Image (cartoon, rainbow, N blue to C red):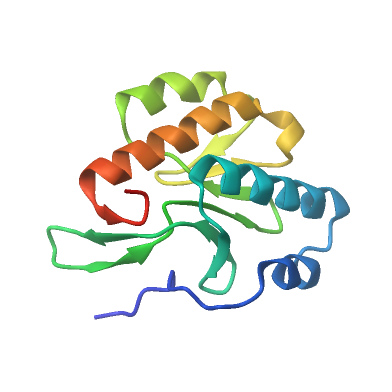
Length: 143
């Protein structure tokens, strides 16, 4: 079975951002997201895998038998967009998303060009909903 890439690495988060992010706006947005997500999650920012900044952790197990650990919420300052890992598939999240602002979405990720494109209060609510959902459905550091 393939090894999951979202394992805690111990890499310094600030060092990662300063070395990896070459866009000053994205760098500033990344440090702002760290401050906000640490506040909302009550968890310290940590590196998961080579490029995900995560807050807290939880253990998941799929019906297929695949299992692993992942951050409760997180983001990655990728070249094309900030990739946010903050959305649980709940009715509350579905109601919040239309009010978030300018973003794109895949099944599990929200893509934002810059933080000023979205409403941070809605992002906060999405993060809190994700934390609530994970707390209720998985073993996690959020309990």
